[in-house]
Length: 213
Length: 213
DNA sequence: GTCCAACATGGACATAGAGTCCAGTCGTGG
DNA sequence: CCACGACTGGACTCTATGTCCATGTTGGAC
Image (cartoon, rainbow over the protein chains, first blue to last red):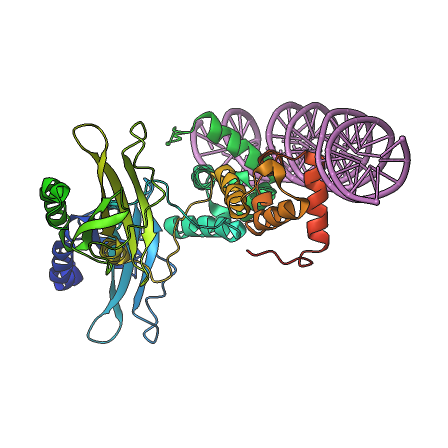
């Protein structure tokens, strides 16, 4: 696919952005027609040319719509947080040609920020980060962002997907809240029984990440 | 006061620290005997030699006590946040000679940290300020600070006092957490029954009494 | 298409935690 | 000494939490 004329057209921009943003930014060119990846610079996820794009939600073909999206947040499987920006690049006729995505890994920045703001700071300060009260929205948000990550609606999540979501929710200690289980079950579109089954599996093998069948 | 022999003794250290920590650190030498300032390097507040020290709380004269305090947080009048460390410097005989305070202005660090972590970040982020998991310490903290406010130990709190504390805990939605009630009861040194009694009274007339928050 | 295994589901069940109630106790003030 | 209000332990009820199982459902192999 490297000989795609659109790649030749846009690759200088992509190389420039990838070079400017250093080793922590991934640049991806998508083909909105086939919904597949055309090319990747600085790959961070293991995706490559030809893989599905999974960005069905941005309606790139509407010439009257906005052409820059984001920045919005993505979560990688290993927990890294990304800031993503997407741009619809058009050909001379105004039709959508390709979609450019820049994914910036924010973890190094955040680590640096943590170092800075921890410098010389009191060891036990933490004065008033009040209690979490809208945990129910939080649940929706965790589920929602996972859905956006893998591009499938809640109903079509696989068992492994649900396990991953549950891992995040448990990490966030959502289940320490009273009456949390029914809410989570409803958010995952799963019965209470299934929820407990998944939770049991999760707690039995907390670090068994891959469930090969 | 510049000719005080103690200033001559310690001033190299102070100059070194002031030079190392750049323009944002103030170094102050106090005389614990007169409770006045001996000398200041990089003054940030408008205090100078001879002004009162205002650090009565650290018991510098106890040779068996600790000799380094902090870092703890101070607030300047203009809102800048400082991290302060104090050290009791002793003479050859082990008696307290001077008290050294280093005040580091954290605002530039925090601004830098904010810049870093805002770089390329989503505009409406609120990503993962995870759930509160040490809510049990939080309970202790609420109770503790109330006790300090009114100067009575936990056991001698009046009924109204306990109602006030409970109001704060309910405000913080502590009771939305599983198994919170026994913890609160223990922290308030009250039986489970009494706790529920107080809670009932509180919920029946939430605004009946005004307690400073 | 059938068969099979893995999974999801609802409901029955068991248990723990959340609240309520009350009779007895304690300390204080009259 | 008594009356009173508040605290207590414990019995009790009810709801939420988890577990278990018999029964559907799905999706892939053949």
